[in-house]
Image (cartoon, rainbow, N blue to C red; front, side, top):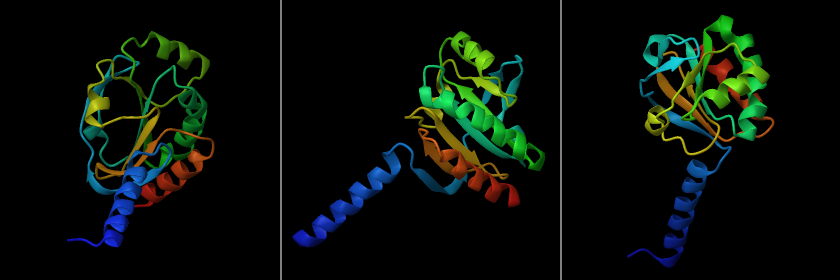
Length: 170
């Protein structure tokens, strides 16, 4: 039997682990595991397959037009994309709405040059276990998931930049 002190310590550790995994905004450095592969249609009508981007650092950003923080971070993601694209970095902006017309309208107001993909059936969102908007996954050059960000608050882009720098150097 565990002592009551050990039970409390164990319970605290479980609660802390749950907070670290579930709390929006926290960055979780994951053990490198293979990023689930997917293929989605882009704005230009062409399919993009994640595994075909092997060799690049890929940020997968799940977003929706109704998400205020998504709108707020979109121009910052564009700046990050422009700065690190020459070093082998790309962003896949994955819109999760069934009807992509609202996303298209938003992108007229906030234009970006990185690929925008449409997950109208939410199959890829489910594959990645997306539970917050936006959700951002960092994939290294070997196709492994390295970082996860849930939600967005001003300043998170500094952490994105730190992680992109780290991953493009590897």
